[in-house]
Length: 118
Length: 113
Image (tube, rainbow over the protein chains, first blue to last red):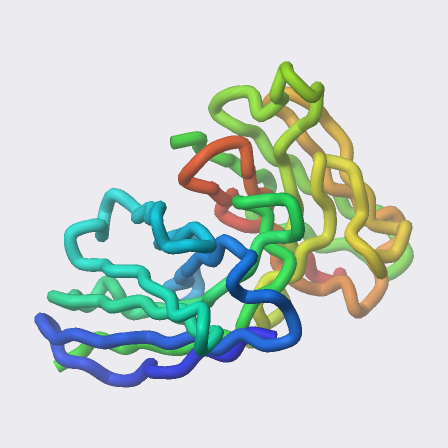
């Protein structure tokens, strides 16, 4: 399973680090990704990272404000967000691709709500 | 980026009746090397994360009932619920996994009439 944490209320311009703890599968063998979903809106891919951390991909609209990272020894995925804006308010999900895939996702966390407001 | 466009935005169907959702991609997601469509469907219920239903445009994930099916190729795809059940009330998303970034349709809400 995947369990996100670290969400909460943050002021515009602030920063936040989301965590995603993984269990029940070989975390170090999986690409991992982050998605977000604004209230009442659809799903948006945010970032992905290769198993060994050597490749990282970010959504163009946020790439200067995001850092994805992972600790394979601790089975954790992270997403650092900086210079947050009100439009970044969303539920942030971590997700694992189906075995043998990179961009097809069969395991999702329950999500962490990030609210950006003054 | 590949733009995914779903229609309709919402559909209201009586229990036991058929629900059909369409998804169109801005470019083909059929990969010529393996002749597979890199298209998936997800179901999302309120307060829950998405659940993978179908991949390769028509392959059901384990445990997905056979009343839910996918079809199509290239740029045009369809998700069909042949006999709507109460537990099928949800928002459904198509997603292309042909390239990065993976992109989703805007979602179709399925309700009971």
